[in-house]
Image 1 (cartoon, rainbow, N blue to C red):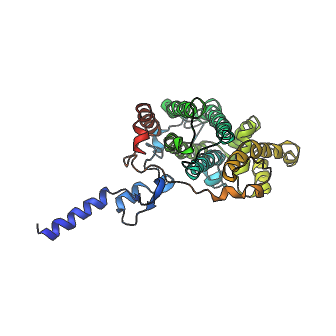
Image 2: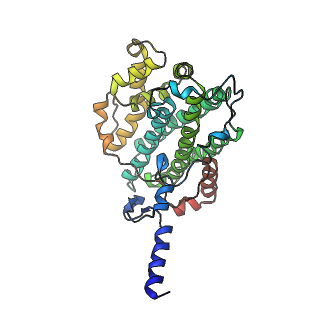
Image 3: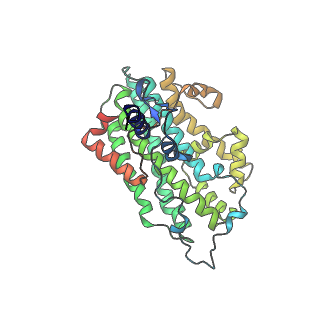
Length: 345
């Protein structure tokens, strides 16, 4: 080869290896790299773009066989008109993702400034609410939603291992926030980034598996009745978070509830207070940290300052090869335990 040919080949190989986000801004913010190779962009296509991992066999429908082909044929998808973007599982996950993303953006916004005592307590109070929300959601899936799906289709038992691995990370974050003294938000940023890096592939993996299966093996009425049971037994903060993060304001929340068995007047009797409770006891904590003084917000227009937060991209060094979310969580937890994650982020 000529020197020019070798140079072009070397540049092509470098482009193929280069992650599609380059680290060219402060505090770990990643910008999109237009020179990313087509192979890299294919790896990041779809709902996991920016996560650098894909759910293992999530869309391999042959891996999930019906318990009885004649009694439970996979032919219910034709009865569905609700778009998958409005599936209740995805909306529940959206609420969790919104909480995690906003808190991480807030940590970076507060940066290295020394926190006062009330700010530290505010962070701890918000974390306890978020932790209980995530723990409830996973327990609900394991005890109610997953058995419901398994009643008609075989789902591998190791699907639950992702929750088990993430629980290790939850406990690590809990120790960092509740059992350890910290004076600056930047001290929490690495462990929170590890938590988010593990959580997001899990949520995407569940959506890629559960949503197609429920639409194939259950009618909207069957699925809706089960979701209605889940919503009516949900804790205040979990349901309030879901309602707060729904699009469409009050009308959007009311339409969502009616779809899953609530009476129209239930909004005024009790459910509206659930959303207000979430805003007062969770979202107001983040707003207080942004404003720099304790505030209690009951209405959405009082929380406009939350729009100033901008999400961060996930850690680009994670991986490019498809890996199950449980393995991502195990890897991050292992690095947290040895202290490597704190150095590598």
